[in-house]
Length: 206
Length: 206
Image (cartoon, rainbow over all chains, first blue to last red; front, side, top):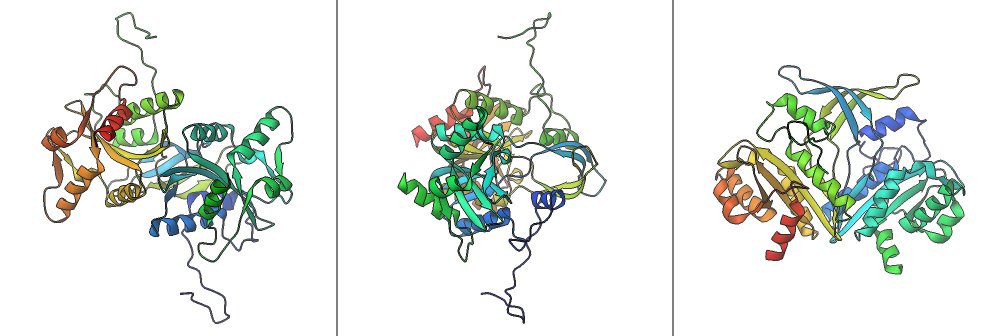
C-alpha cells in the first residue's frame, strides 16, 4: 500500500543512513537528481525483496575499517575511538542466487559520456578475475546518475577496457560501449532496480 | 622453506592484528593453548593458500560497525571517531569453491565437554537456513581450544540442536554429538587447517 501526503506525494520511510552513505554525503556534494536515493539504497531494497521472496541471498559487506583504538567504558558498549577506511580488496556485494555464486560492485558516476575507470581498484579486478575462474558470476552495476540510466557492465567488457588502459588507452569506458556491449537495467516499481532480471537475461543471451 | 631460530624453533611471520582479534584480545583473556594463533588466523591462512592455488575464493567479511562520527582533518585521511560493534546478521566467511557457494561461521570454545549455543545468533541460523534453501553449502567450524580439536558442524546438526533448545532442551551441543555426527578436521602442516578437505569429504559422504 502506498501512503500519500495530502499533496499527493507518496510517503517513503526514511532508510537508516549506512556508514558508506554517511561518508559519501560528507565527502562529495549530495546529488539530488535521484531524490536522495543512492544506488546503494536501491540495491539494498532489491536484495531485501529477493531475500523475502526466497529468490536470492545477497548482502552488502560491511565497510572495511582498520580499527586502531577501542574504549571499553564500564557498564556500556565498547566504542571505537580511532579507525581508518581501508581500500577494499574485494567487491561490495556477494551471495547466492539459485545455487550460483554472485559477486558484484556498484558504482555511480555523474559523468554523462563515460565511466571513469578510477572508480575501480586493481585489487577488485583481480578478485573478479578469480571469481570467473571459479565459475562464479561477477559484474559491475553502473549508474549514470545525471542520465538516470543503469547498466550491467560484464566482467569481459570491464577487463578489456582495463587491460587497454594499462597499455596506454583511455582511462574510461564511453557511454557508447555501454549502449552497444552492456545490458541496460530497466527500472520498475518495486523493487525499483530489479538487477537480477537483467543478470538472468544477460546469461541467457551468452 | 622453514626459517629457524638458533634454538631450532620455527620462525613464523607475525600476522597483522585484525580488528576482531584486537577486540577479542581485550575482551577476554588471551588463550595460550594454541600459541597465540586464533581460529581466525588459521582460517585466513587456509584462505590465502586456496586463493593462491586457485582452489577457492573465500574471504572474511569486515567487522560490522555502526559509524556515528567521522572527522575529516585537512590533508589527511578521514578518521572514524565514534563507532559501535553491531551484532552480525550473516556469517563471517563466504565465497566460491569450484562453482559452489560456500558460507560459514567459525567459533572457538574453551569448554571441554560441549559447545554453547550462545556462540551463535538467531539471525545467523536464519541466514544459514536461507543459504541451504538456495542450494549453498553452509556450516560452522568449531574449535575446542583446550582440546585442540576442530569439527565441521553441519547445518543439519546445528539446526536440530537449535530447534530443540527453543523448546526447552539443552543450550549446548555435547562433544559426544560432534564425535558421532560431525566430521573432525585433521590439522596438517600447511595450511594447518585445510578445512575444505573436510568439507569435500563430508559432501562426498552425504
